[in-house]
Length: 553
Image (cartoon, rainbow, N blue to C red; front, side, top):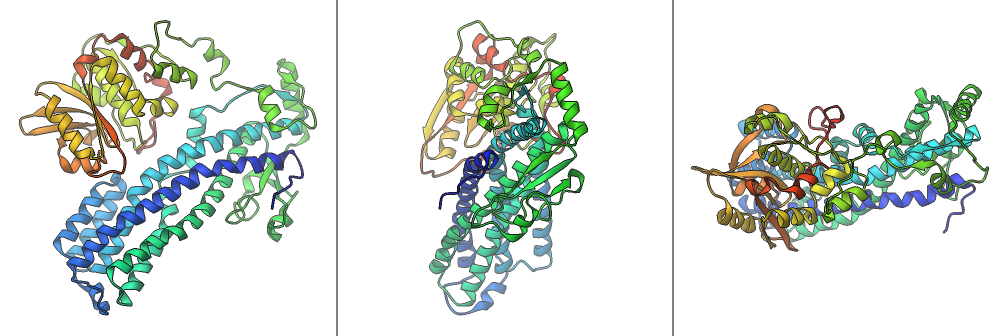
């Protein structure tokens, strides 16, 4: 049944909920990926335990074999530092007491696999929720101005403000919690099937059936998360203007619950808001929102400031949110910064055109006063950072410094995303004379690139699978440069097949082709096009976005 909005606000909300689709799709993708990835691992554990479908539940209590322990260690070592320490501690505790049974091993595989994919879900979810938060912050501004009765021009929130907001509302733990319900269902299904004496093939079908259950849960959880982020983002705009109260606004239709209906129109203090009690979401799938409840003093102050500063704009009673945006919302960068923005005048690459279209600030790189060592560069640009894609811009920043350019990479946002895209890397390879190979076996392609191009005494930008790093060849083999860990853990590390699988996330067999890249950093020296591109990575010292404990740039 089509919902008929009762006012402008509800019309915007209905259209707005389409923004949950990216988050829902990302969640379903990783839930399915996790479920499928468990099948082979669990099958191996059952085979090692001698399970063949006989009705003997005691197989669950048999000790896990050595290969199972090694596999669990391998999975755990691919996790972020804080999670790895926790799961390895639990694993070794079980091994030490002889409690690592088949059932415990299966449970640990499920949990570890969930942790692994929650990293991807966190990054993908943040990209999806970034648009939700940005739009909701603007909607908060719109509601404030509607309440005041006049309008004024506002800047878009900007990537830094939105990311700082999301840091508190969407965390790695949130992504893990999203996937936990599916993990519990899988564990229960396997235990139940084994107790019934089902054959491993039937157990596999049980796991695959979980995907259908997961899709329903994903839809509900995504909608609830979108509502929570949206309403919190509106509060962010309310507080910015000194608004201290909000009005609860229920979304009325045939599905409106009695609790939400009873809260409609009631006024609450912002400091007293309690999600689930007097602030949406009240329940899973809740579609309610809020409005700004301005006191007379706040209204008068905002109106007076707009008029006094010459910023007042007309605001019709029936002006829609989209009409207001066209009239009142300026570009992302504040005017004073836009007027100082430097735009390269030389011929531009496609990547530069994209960066300018996205309004990414350009800050020319300068020459270093004197060369700095590899260790000094690591100290300068390295640090805890788990942001998907920042590895590429970090490696390019390192290469720039090695070639005498002062490049600092703490920017994040659209800049980070562009420099992690394969189309950008293809262009950089083209302008620097690098090499690229394409195939479905990332490990094989990566090894071929290294063996055919890397010589001792030189350093290379190298991208394969889902990671990019500086690599080199030494007497003992290949090494890669870690720049995203704590200061004492950064630096050159051994690069082997295990690292290609765990750190670079290279596949041995993929369903589609991906290209890998390698560039001699010496070829990047005195390259005007690359130097201009690095200007979109280069960041002012007072604009650093790298957070404590591994937050994003």
